[in-house]
Image (cartoon, rainbow, N blue to C red; front, side, top):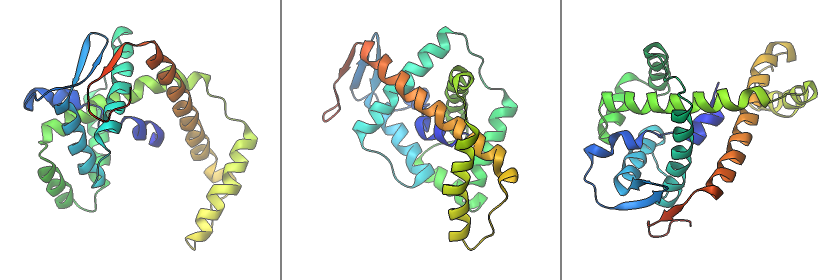
Length: 211
């Protein structure tokens, strides 16, 4: 269950597809690398494929810079890339997030992404989320009281709002614990990214982008 990491990293493989776009300008320079305007367009298309809408170019550029930092550190540490089986499983969950196979294919075609491109994006997304999980999970501690509070304040009200009987605390315990672990990973990741960005030389060339 990686809801928080996915929300941070979704569409992070835009750079993999940039070579297939028209290189129309540089959006940012990060150390000795560049992020292209075409990278932003590809990520925007992927977001629309998943959610039917995309962030602003400035927000997407911020996301791409964050992804550059994660990818750079993962590569330096020689972190293993996901296996084909892991990629296949994630792709299957992505397909099932649509109401039907036809809707999935229609959305993919409308976005302009091929099946192989979607697979590349998913593989890169997994690489980065797996790295963040490996880096920060060991430091996350979940207090038993936090699990009980989450159950009382979130699980029970949501179930009742939906007209359902809430599961017992014991039945929901492991899922709640993992959700709280993922929240902790996300919080630590965001803190690390903010601190790391402050040490980088970044030139934002995108009009309206944050400096």
